Amino acid sequence: YAVVFSGIQPTGTPHLGNYLGAMRQWRRLQDMAGDEDKLLFSIVDLHAITMPQDAEALRSRRREMLAALLAIGLDPKRSTLFYQSSVMQHTELMWILSCTASMGYLGRMTQYKSKLLAGNKAGDLDEAVSSRLKLGLFSYPVLQAADILVHRATHVPVGDDQKQHLEFARECVTNFNHTYDQELLVSPQTITAPSSRVMSLRDPSQKMSKSSPNVRSRILITSTPNEIRQRIMSAVTDNTNAVTYEPNDRPGVANLLELTAQCSPNPTTPADVADLLMGGTLGDLKNACAEAVTAELRGIRDRYTELLERQGGKYLVDIEAAGAEVARRNAEETMRLVRDVVGLASLR
Ligand code: AQP
Image (cartoon, rainbow, N blue to C red; front, side, top):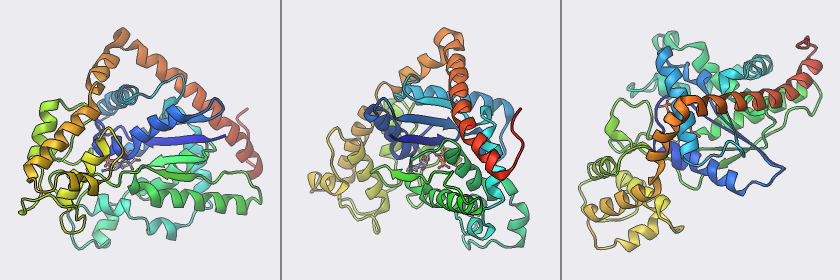
């Protein structure tokens, strides 16, 4: 049987990249899962604090993310939805993994660099940049590994940008199991969604991101049909008013073709969409894209708003409590074994 685990940071309303790269895949896995499979999806607030967060905003974003996951079709009867900070075993395992993880490997990871070096085109990690680097931002792949390993996940569905972190999680398994001469931790497989990275609508060399200051760079899963249309019609493309799929030379156009293909009701490829629109203009492509995206996101916005208000908020509070309870129990099964082989004290 499979144990599926994945996470999302409560750093804002999810966008089309989060949805196509991760969340839609989670729903599909849930819908395919058998009775004996387990699915756990975590709202990873401990990861969110690697960047400065306002406490009140973090609390409401966490709850909004829970509503968003339910609105896209995750079912709390089939999937365990929980807040990372409600399950202390994640941080406990992180420390233990840190004691066998390699600094060199972590130093080669790119995500902390891209957050830190945003705007620094030279991309150097010089003295000044290093001194601003917080330890948590550097070591957060260890927490991510702990998130996965503490639940003995066999499958981790993530966007293309997270592949490197999953390799690191497997490295943590090897290091831990080797050090303690036990096959205790389980090596997870990565599942990436068929869609590649969704790019910013303002700068197709950057991925679409929740925290980009330019709100016009993204489409939220709660955007209205009007907003979706406006954002797509004003997406940055290029000066050639023809539709061709050339990801390297025409990244803005390729991004719109990929979005259209991903949101089409029948499986298709960006190259097929380009063929269909052959002889048409970029305006035709943008129209087709806006239509496909609007249809794919239909209903999510209304469900999201309704869920936030259901029973005056009590509905979500109950789901939070039930999810935390199941996740704690599952994580504790692993931690009991881990504490024992490492020689640490048990909880009681
Ligand atoms: N642009 C993207 N295309 C495809 N997949 C994406 N994901 C994120 N952006 C894209 C996938 O969404 C999942 C959850 O991501 P996250 O919230 O944990 O953090 P992130 O990858 O850092 O996402 P953002 O939107 O860029 O958030 P901020 O701005 O807060 O850093 C992951 O599976 C990720 O692959």
